[in-house]
Length: 112
Length: 112
Image (cartoon, rainbow over all chains, first blue to last red; front, side):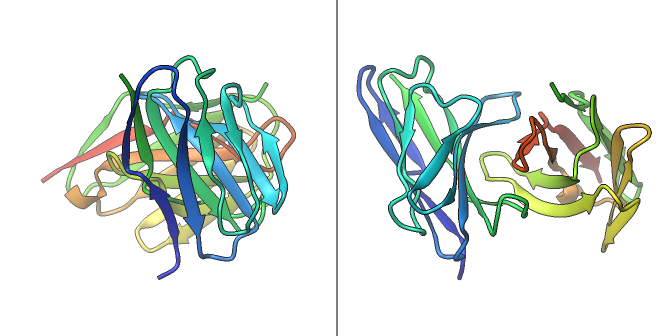
């Protein structure tokens, strides 16, 4: 079945540690995205990538980094510079920047 | 900048009734507007997209309208069922790009 797979589903991190969240899609989509969701908040865009080897900052990119070396993969690293990393992280993909978004099941990161 | 407004209060309705959810935006009319459903702890699922030159879109029990004069989209679920209980998010491009920005969502609770 085609879709988006995020891992891990739950992740705990100590302060000062970097963590990397995985996002893989087999939908052959060009565009991929990372959003963050906090309780009672809408989804906020962290980074997006329109094509392999290219990515752009979203509204809240500080403290995060991404790479897009393969069309199928768009990992997100939450660095120690991110002040409030505890959140629900959602990866999505679309055919292009104007298409419907297909979301993964999310990764919940908790900083201890 | 463009703001997206969805009612933060939960909408409670009886099974069989029509649920109507509202999405207002503040500035320019977007090229399109999308509606998603999100269940607790899950990623959003795309439901419908309506473009700025369309007044109405239907899919089974779902109907979306787009009024560029009122700067508003209405999302209707007819013959609602308890299984329709979820948070519904609207999304539209803001800030000069085609990438959708999400509203905070409205929780719908359908009582049997």
